[in-house]
Amino acid sequence: MTDRRTQYNPTLFEYDASARYPWQVFDRVVVAMVTWNRREMTERAIAAIYRNAGMPFEMLVVDNASTDGTAEMLEAIAAKQGNLRLERNAENVGKSRAMRQLQALLPQDALVVFFDNDVEMLSSLFLVHVQKAFHAVRLATGSTDAVLGMRTLNCEEHGFRHAADVRRFFVPSAESGAPRSSFAAVDKTKAEGAETFAEQVLLGVSDFVLGQCWACPAPLLQAVPYDQQYPSFIGGVDGFASAHWAKRGIPMGYLENGPIARHLDWPYSEEKIALYTELAKRRATTDLSFLLWKLRRFFR
Image 1 (cartoon, rainbow, N blue to C red):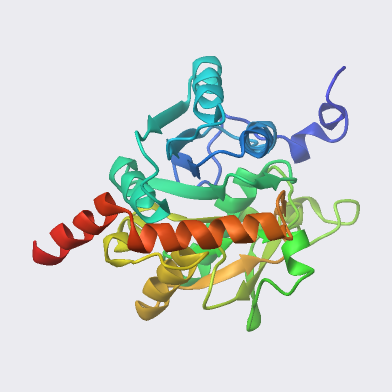
Image 2 (cartoon, rainbow, N blue to C red):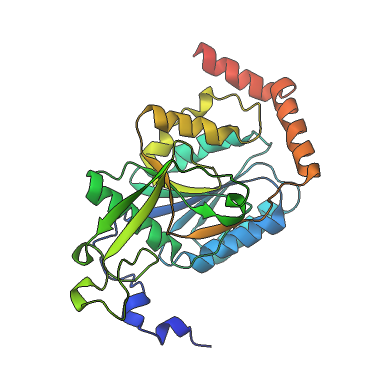
């Protein structure tokens, strides 16, 4: 069946990979992920990324010694898609060290879009939206240095996200371009031709970006000193990275009128909370390789 978007104002809603758009800030986009088991959710999350990306990207996955067939499933996707690079760890080294691996593998000129492996992107053309959002920030501030989170709706229902204020970043039509997006500032049926692609990005300013799905230029992620973190509680990498960016004055916030996602494992079950609590205790007290790694870093 023909995609109906090609039948309905295609010049307004289609991305042309051969074109060069004013909003295309980054030539390379890397979607990054750390996986450990949860094969069904991981497969669903990755399928949504490929289905809804809307523009070319590279994919980088570090698997922390999954035991449920997740790594094999990822290898099959890599063989089929051709743009997925998989790094398989022989043991579960924890998320902080996996993030260090991602840092070392990322090209410095790329935009990084990070997903937890249990988050399903629901919006189409989401990478176009993310690029446009960084373009809006660049027009307003002269820099793309920012960390932009995407909304996970079912987490918002539980107050799991905080935005202290909302800022508007306007993008004139001449600085924007197709495809029209959720950032559209004018109705397409009423806009004058010159204003068809006028946009405004609503950014919920925050000092804490949840680690479920967010984006930033690669150097900002590479500068986070994950080797200094001791992950003794659930969700530790989120707070650690956010504190690092906040200390350095890096703007952070959520795209209020941008792409939306769904957390496939929220609210957490009692079983999962018990598992994470046990894993945190084990990592802090019995993981010899982790403790030796910390000591080596301390005395270096």
